[in-house]
Length: 143
Image (cartoon, rainbow, N blue to C red; front, side):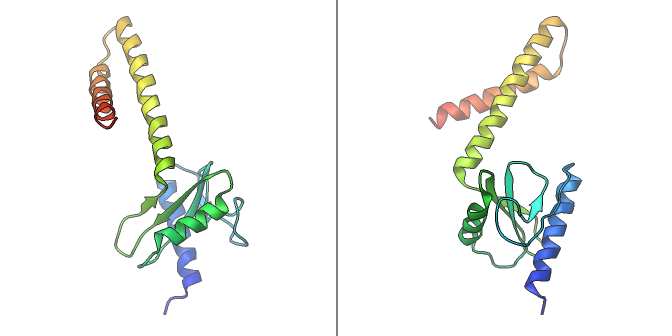
């Protein structure tokens, strides 16, 4: 039988490695006590990661644990089962804030590309314009 502490440690090391593959300088946190200074994985500023590498997970309990220890950071639960991909769970309000920041970046990029097009040909302008129009249409539909 696998020791749950060892499995948790392996999951945290695995998650840190996966996040490094995406280009983030992450490592396993120090697991002495809960709190904002001891997330399971360090290296994503502003995000408090609760890592769960289990077959059965009570997401609400895991999220409550992340929220209790997050301080001012955004609490997230990153989790996966055997032979499955990593998933991220977060509160909808935090996801909406993240999405709005992404959307604002797309708008800024579109404006930049529009200005560049005025100075000369710029192939990506039309692609970004289509993406932006799709976002705007979805936003208007959803109120």
